[in-house]
Image 1 (cartoon, chains in turn blue, brown):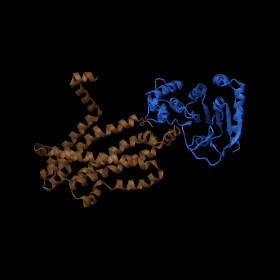
Image 2: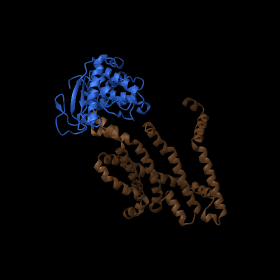
Image 3: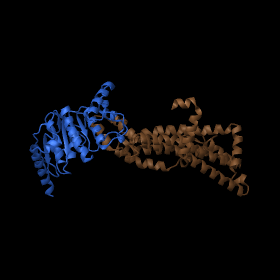
Image 4: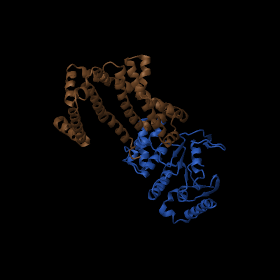
Length: 228
Length: 273
């Protein structure tokens, strides 16, 4: 992956997408091949690779602000600086006014925003996302996808997103890696040539540059499911 | 709110009274009266009630005697002191033990049956062997109370640590947390509700252990009072001791232990999960 790229990994369920992400995160050991971040091989989890999990995974006993600042706290960033950075990311994900709330007082979509802000606030080299919007309702998902796109532009972060949702992959990805069914291997790479700032659902659904690519990915994935 | 209650203490008192009645106080008062009436009736219907079951009034009468001489407060203090020291130290040892064991799956699976084994041996079943070691001393009572507390709390903390979702641990690892920070930021708070429940359970067991310990190995204290009163046929004093044990426990549970437990669980937002 290159700097500032948004890559999406799509494939049929059970093809090992999450496994791949966990390996990249350093949560699982790998047997073959190498994983490197800026030329340094991965040995276990580290703050250079931030992860947003499928089930938000924010701590229920910490307030929104304390969850978002957790990474900085672990890095030993002084309180003043921490407060400033947390404030910045609270606003970026649109949670201003909810800083002192506890996760159980928030909706599913808001919890996922907290998780996103927590990962970004720790300022990783790359952000790994594992089906981050799988657990929220369809309307919220669309909003969150557009916001993630906006945040990706604003932070210029390198992002790798794992999903089984073809629309999501095509909407967000600069490149989409399509995986075969189990045992998952890379089947094809589809490049989406739409400028990031023009990616708004209302517009892309009418844009052949989007629909043609999306249908191409959809066919590739469906071919894998059909073989069974 | 607070300025009003400072200015007019009667308002505070009435607010507190209202809260008491609303939170099951009425039911408590009713059932107490009913129990006392039943007790009086049984006592009146049997032959030689002073020997077998003295009425509440004569029990109260005997307590007035003990109160006068300052014996009862002294015994009460003794018993509570034994409970507090034994259970606090037992809990203070049990919590880190449970966490340490809970850190590793293999270790926790090895320790699980051991903890379960000792949890089944109640304090009173342990008393004889401890009395062989240290005789009828203060040490014996202390050790039995501590032992009784240690296992339930350690057991609960272990379960709490093990049942904290792995995803929280993984999230912290990817944020770059050390093992120690994971314990501090995830496992300890994650086990908090179990710790609160375990502490309440532990103190409940310890309360029984204190009384049992005092009966067999103590000097002074409520348990000792009951036991020695029985030997000189002072049934009223035996019944008084029993009633005190029950009433004290209800107060302790209602005003100290239960609020701590429900506060933790609520604050953690775990009610709805």
